[in-house]
Length: 602
Image (tube, rainbow, N blue to C red; front, side, top):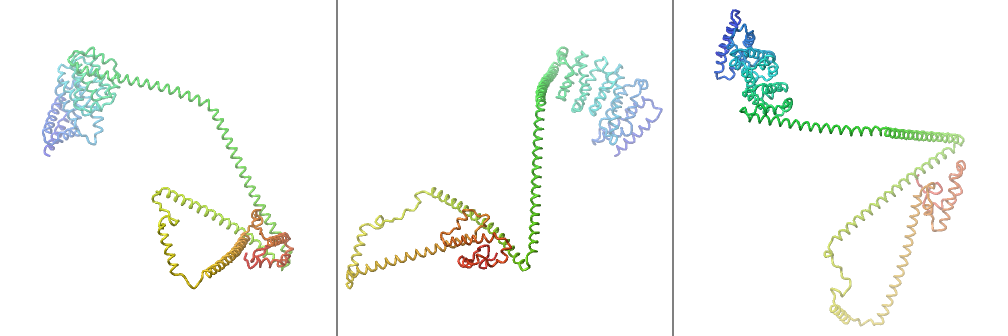
């Protein structure tokens, strides 16, 4: 803390002294050199690593560095030949700029202040080139420039394009050229990322400087330094050097002719190998680019051929497309017209049906107005009855058809299930070994279980039993007569039972046939949909029954053909009224002649 206060006091005292107008530039340079050197040395020997950075930052913020730049930018006449102090101040100024932290003024520091420092250093170096004491002082200034460039690589473009640097390069002194090349080598060595941070334009200018030294100078030290710089650029830049070396044709020949046998043949060979490698890569890239161009030409020619073919076939394609479009549009129009015609026809049918229904209802109302009052109600009941008959017949037909379909489906399902079971059983029997099948049961006596000796023994036991229990009261003749009588009675009983069974079977057959006929008559379809085969199924084998049924059918047809007004008074009477009760009693209250008999509800 005390050191910081001392530095603040020293800088305040320095600025107060510099503002004194009585001090000459030489005295200002001496004062600045002593103060800067003292503060930097005291900050460098401290244990705190940030003390030196803080000191340099205070130099910038307090304006000391700006004052240094203004003093060094003065004309040589005002410096009065005090070049040693100027070189020392330039070195201290460059050292103070490296590591300073401008903070909020960072943009102004990098864009305005540092370029002014570089321009001041190059101007001072240009003034020292023509002096006799130039070599040691020029080395100090060039080291300051290299040190500043290593910390701020973005200043390289300004250095290479500076008029002062061009003036330095135009010097015929070998020492000056060597110092320039060594400055760049030192900068690249101190900052390994210096070359990678350079733009292609700056790198090309630096490479051009090295090649120019090889082409213009004949000094071995300058040539060796230039070759070393180019090798360093090749190692650090890598593939970026290819596009740059492409601008220098014949560089390998120059190295081969002029710089062999100068004491650095190994470096020359390495540089030649790099250049030839780059040339080989460039030739390969040119060959590949040539192949690419050839492929592009071939592809362009083939695409032009395809395009011309497409253009030629375009008219046919357009014609086909138009033809298909017109056919599709014509088909759609026809479909729309047919659909509209069907809708109109359906609408006309509905309208005509409504009109016919209205005319029928109107005619019925007119006829009802003509009828006597006592006949209106029976007529309406007859209409309701006929409507009920139609509805019942339609429902029964639908029900029977559904039941018949369900029965067919059930039968088919049962058949499929039976086939599946049979198939599974057969497969099981086929897979089952024959040894596991049970042995067949013996049906004949004498094969196994009853031998001849056993049969003879049993027969002997039976004869002995008969002999031991022979009856002495009944004679043989009586037994024979009794046996004969029993046989006759048994035969008569058997014949009588067989005849009774035949009669019962005939009765059961007749009853089954009668019930079948009754079920067929109940489920009979209407006459409008009956077929010839269905009509034949209702014919009876009995002549009397067939005649009676035929007469009843004819009477029903005649009654249905009579006009409605002829049947108003004959609802309960008629030609068929004589034999209807008989048919009703005989057939059990069936629907005969369009009437419901025996309490059948419609």
